[in-house]
Image 1 (tube, helix red, strand yellow):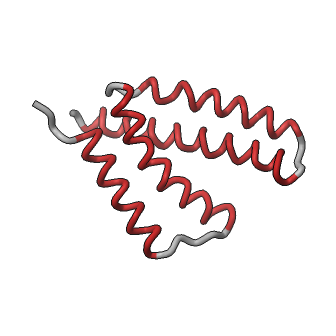
Image 2 (cartoon, helix red, strand yellow; image 1 turned 135 degrees about the horizontal axis):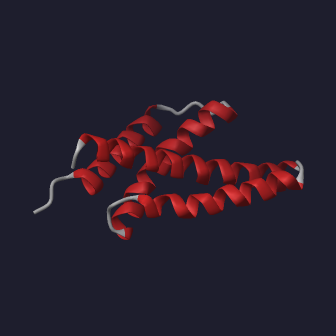
Length: 112
């Protein structure tokens, strides 16, 4: 895998995560915190974009979604910290690191 493809793949994972978590967060604000229904509509639109972004990865479906799970875990912890003030503890950080190692193995390990 070339460096450019690696960077593009990582960027797609980050974009997918931001779409999924951001869209879900807007729906959360609407349903759980009584905010405007327009936030729910915007969240739904962003969640549709999340459904499209992973299809741009070059790897097969199962591999992309398995690896994305690890990315989602780490981004969820970061989102909770940045927006909700829920600082991850050492076990969250260790778990996140384990997940990212798994992502790297699933997506980027050389295959025969």
